[in-house]
Amino acid sequence: QVQLVQSGAEVKEPGASVQVSCKASGYSFSDYYIHWVRQAPGQGLEWMGWIKPNSGGPKYAEMFQGRVTMTSDTSIRTAFMDLTSLTSDDTAIYYCVRDPDIPEEDFDSWGQGTLITVSS
Amino acid sequence: EIMLTQSPGTLSLSRGERATLSCRASRYVDSGYLAWHQQRPGQAPRLLIYAASRRATGIPDRFSGSGSGTDFTLTINRLEPEDFAVYYCQQYGESPRTFGQGTKVEVK
Image 1 (tube, chains in turn red, yellow):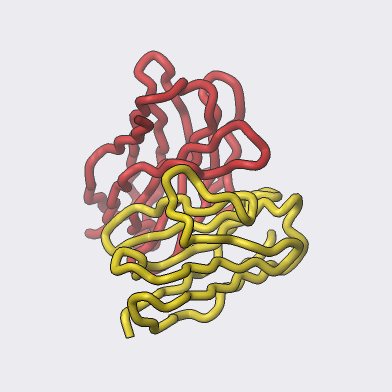
Image 2 (tube, rainbow over the protein chains, first blue to last red; image 1 turned 135 degrees about the vertical axis):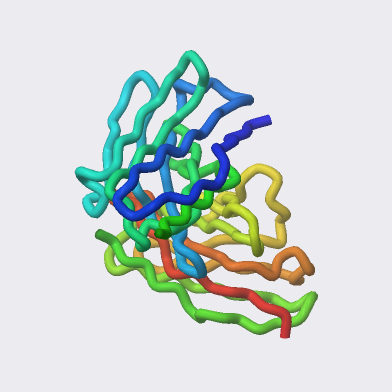
């Protein structure tokens, strides 16, 4: 079955960078987009951007331009999201989400989430 | 960007009742590209409905979606204990993708 397994929780100091990984299984990795969505504690969902392994993007939400980098490695079926210059406002659960390359369909499978805590 | 406004913020209902959740877009959602996601406490969201009215794989038929243009509805018939959760609408008709702020369905 389709699975997106993310890396574990991390604690970072303000100003640091973080990388979150998302390992895919159960489907053809290159045929689907991977999006990243975050959720601050007790808050709603915020879209960060997407990448299509080997063929498309990345495309980032305007508010993250210059601070986020999304990459993928098809040899290990893994997508990565790097976020720099962290502040306390970046404390959140970060999710990777699969998106079929079909116009009618969208976020059909979510990773389990990775909690990133920014604190001194 | 398209803003999505969900109402009500909280819905207090009993098991077996029907829940009706609303999602209003600030402008037309292209081709009805509107999804609903459920998030149970401590879990990741999961897709319930896509293209406004199509149930995702494995979703029980007590969940149904309707609407077009700027007004969309999620209906949950005969609430089960596992249905008490937060529900988010999400549009994917244009970039950036956006989400509503969520409706919490809680036990009355």
